[in-house]
Amino acid sequence: MVSGNADCFDSFLLGTVSCTLFLAVNGLYSASDDVIELTPTNFNKEVIQSESLWLVEFYAPWCGHCQRLTPEWKKAATALKGVVKVGAVDADKHQSLGGQYGVRGFPTIKIFGANKNKAEDYQGGRTSEAIVDAALSALRSLVKDRLSGRSGGYSSGRQSRESGGGDKKDVVELTDDSFDKNVINSDDVWMVEFYAPWCGHCKNLEPEWAAAATEVKEQTKGKVKLAAVDATVNQMLASRYGIRGFPTIKIFQKGEDPVDYDGGRTRSDIIARALDLFSDNAPPPELLEIISEDVLKTTCDAHQLCIISVLPHILDTGASGRNSYLDVMLKMAEKYKKKMWGWLWTEAGAQSDLESSLGIGGFGYPAMAAVNARKMKFALLKGSFSEQGINEFLRELSVGRGSTAPVGGGAFPKIHAVEPWDGKDGEDPT
Image 1 (cartoon, rainbow, N blue to C red):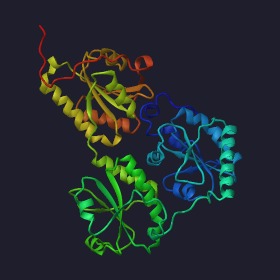
Image 2 (image 1 turned 90 degrees about the vertical axis):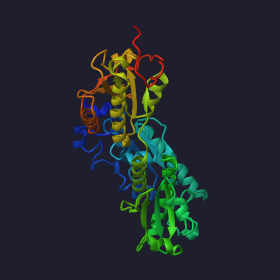
Image 3 (image 1 turned 45 degrees about the vertical axis):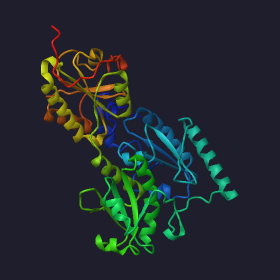
Image 4 (image 1 turned 60 degrees about the vertical axis):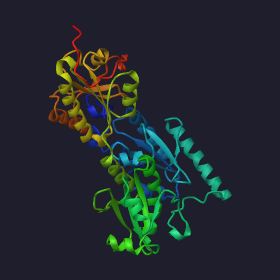
């Protein structure tokens, strides 16, 4: 097993782009292994629509724990071959699939049993023996359930809407009468499926659409909604939007003409598009002044990366100068809002211990550092504190380039409670 390169920025800081070394071998597994590589393209067919029991590892190639698990996972897959399916998802590459199953850290192992829509977390050991034992235990439970008639294994859910198949509780059924009130006059984003009850493709889509609706509702807090229109009944709507084939999916956003959705029809495809729509319409992240330890900790713990700026003292810039720096940060926060990073600032000297831990140390203001609080690694802006300079810095982060250093002391230092800036010019105490 090859360990991660300490100079590879993304392995410590972003965790979003695989190192060049790992790109060359396409993750941690190959076609010669008994581990089945899973992606958003094949996950639904291989796992969700399967009668088999599955153990699925969600990993990132740069993750040291994942690298150590790899040989054990391969051994377990070989031992369980023909008995239990063992798969792996590069959740760094396929973030939508990891997000769909609530993956927050690596490696995460899920057991997909009789009810594929309710995967169980694997909490056992990381040896091949422990993995095999857990798989056989889960398999024994599945077989006993089938024997008792409690679970007949996976049902494809491809019943027609009239039969009540599938859990469609989060799919909004729309009609000629309710459409405008719900969709056209809404501030939310709507993905609307126009279907016909007799349409085979619509029946195939139904369980995917229903499952995606629930996940999208949760992840976007209801800001993106999935709906369905029976176009054979609501012919005014079908005519209004030129529906000529089924299913047709259209995206509605306030103040814009509807556009066709032309992506994949698996749950993961639909969720990924919905989350893109959500981030496109979401406001930029809030720019917070570090006035307490809670502000720093809450922001950096909640985001994969937090961008911290140290601005010159108010006596050196005045309010207009400071606001110009804050405007630059706000523009960059808007530009990179899809990354869902945290954005913070402090005045030079207000948090001197924090400055020192990030290698800023009392000079060169304004300064900026990008920090991964989980890894306690940071990178410094080397270019100008301008839209162009910061954009180049953040773009480099996005593609896994740049150098990092450990946060001094291995943890954030003590943060001093300070009064928030009042928006005014400073007063010289002398």
